[in-house]
Image (cartoon, rainbow, N blue to C red):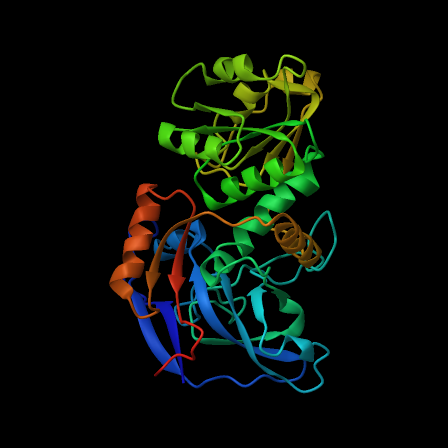
Length: 360
């Protein structure tokens, strides 16, 4: 048998409702042709999971397992599999479907994220999952299960936003990462530092800026200060007193502020707009040939490249807090509460099982 964590439907308007968590038990699945049975050991939350509980996300499923991020151990290999070498190996799961390798846009036209969606029945908040053999990658050996679960969606999103979109993942380049503390922003910081770039950050919390500097950021400023762009300009290197790229997940005034700092032809890589669904595009950005590039998630090829880079450089995702037990609904609700309050610095992770099979 396999436990499945999902959301329960209750009445309420989008934004006001908060769907409760629920556990159900289903039969343990069996892998089919070219499939793998993975015993999940850990799964992680993303902001989309909070949006889902508030009914602020499309194609919500009330029966499918929650959570896109997860890792585990391959327990069985299906018939005709070309990856029998994965038997017994630790793997991380791809958090999306339908995007193979096109660097510009998904081949399928739409990329559903796994977990709590009617578009795919895969989710990582369960004891066992069956996936196609192409939907896993070997977990870097230096990662624990908690760290492995913290990596997939944020790591992929951050990798594409920085590496594919900015042309600034290189030694000596100056990069601004806004809203440090979230999983994507922290991965971008780690990737940028590993590439040898000078990474600067913004946050509304000085403690988070200090933690980012301890992780290798060259400096940071508070976006609560009206003149934060002037403060940032003052700490840029004298031999390169401008930004090559901004990687942003908030929107708002990012164009108005960063256009004063970006070099001519600089890039704003936008992976989210948490401040609001609109922002102003200025003529000064046009005159300076600034490029605004939207980006979201990434392809399997980018996922493989990101995982390999993490292994090569020994990068460990930042984990803010963990709880033990898939059926620890009170503890998991606590993780959601921290996310809603913006308390976390890093990922929030559920430890599903130890190296022993779950006892049901």
